[in-house]
Image (cartoon, rainbow, N blue to C red; front, side, top):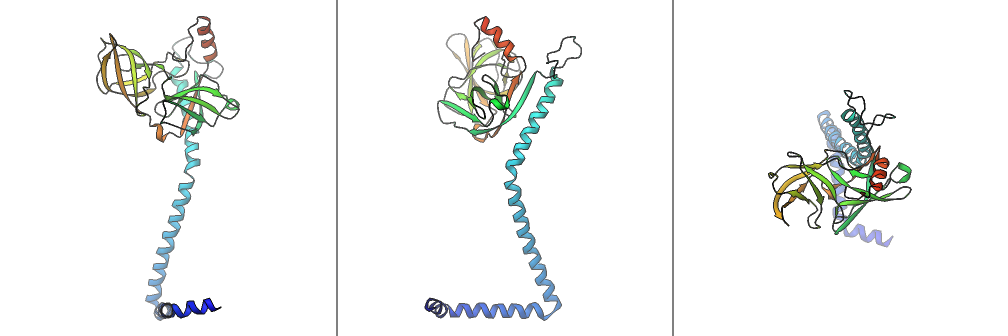
Length: 279
């Protein structure tokens, strides 16, 4: 009680000011119809502003669910597109599985862990064996390649990122069709190298680099990036520096690629002693 009295005595001028302001505001609000309508209008504007603010906040918090739904829809559309790309009705034998009409299927996933600051980076995805994920499956984003599944558990999988010095796949220059090996030199997370391209090949800055299709992990023609620069290295081959299309620091949603005939192709490769992670 003493503390309350001390508070009132200390701030009595401010408290009296608030009381008088409230009384004046009430008199103005009830004096004329015009004043009442003006006050009501101001209150409506303030109320609408706060409702809009709350709506924006609710919309922002729902973005996580929206992004997941978009990832599932993108995977569904890519599955449909793959059928039309690979189903050649002019041929008796098609490149698709007669059971479901698809050469590749795509399983949406979310990145659970994403380091980019190491020499050998790995990703963790929130899908695993129960979702049909197996080792040596490719992982892509909406606009580029991401990595290769190397290990799985029931609900999660480990992916060797493109940003890993042990990563190596076949890639090609889209304009000329010449092949090379795509690797990462461990320096810039936005760049990679295309090596083993013969020196006689005509290269231009801005040329597109894409997947070659000579792999059981990635479909043909997925764009990887553009040529930044090139130089001769170790004899008659180029080292070509590529600006990657993918931004790993913003990567959240991906798709795991399931090749219908992967087991069959791998079996033949093993019999020929040709199986390698970089093929």
